[in-house]
Length: 270
Image 1 (spheres, rainbow, N blue to C red):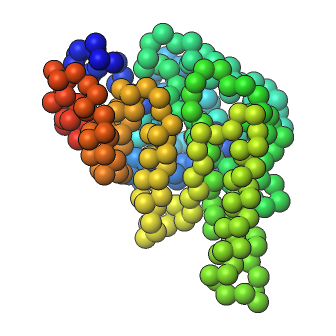
Image 2 (spheres, rainbow, N blue to C red):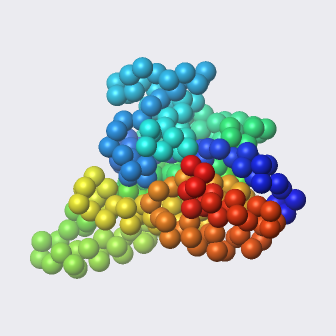
């Protein structure tokens, strides 16, 4: 990193690529819209990088090889896996093959940079067998996995006791959530971090605060400094994180690129 010129650092990464895994109704699309600060549908691309004309029709949404972006923040490139609820082992193999293929890519901008694994908080059916296998088997490459526990509000309903007040029921749900979260770290290939979200569909909720936590934990999981810099610069939810990383990492860079780095982290080169 110390021998990298400003132009090399600028060209190393131009996009941040995320694989999103999760069952249907796990809240994936709503979460991504919150991350990109939009209510618009994404634009989906085919295998030759041609934009499909009708993204709202859902074509390719669950095709892992068809990336999609939101116009509000096109530097985030997402890939969607349909999840493993059908019990079809080929789906797991397809995900593992995709991760391996992207890890072998020589073009850094075609590599996979992070995996967001969405798990719906369900007391009775938290993880399926194939989901457990994903966290049990070795992962090719060094792509960090962030487990996102979604729909905490549904978990409250599952444990709700009418004889108790809301706060007590909320605490009981938190206890269950912590047990489910702890179970993830018992596997051979556990996630790098776990976050949980709730009420993401509520426009009046604190969803942006929750997204900040996801952004922060994802950034912390990245080992490559220039990739970490790209990620914190293109996200639009946590200005404090941009400032923190500028203060923390700029002193370790060569003087010739310090001014560029500050501009990069503050969004000046978007």
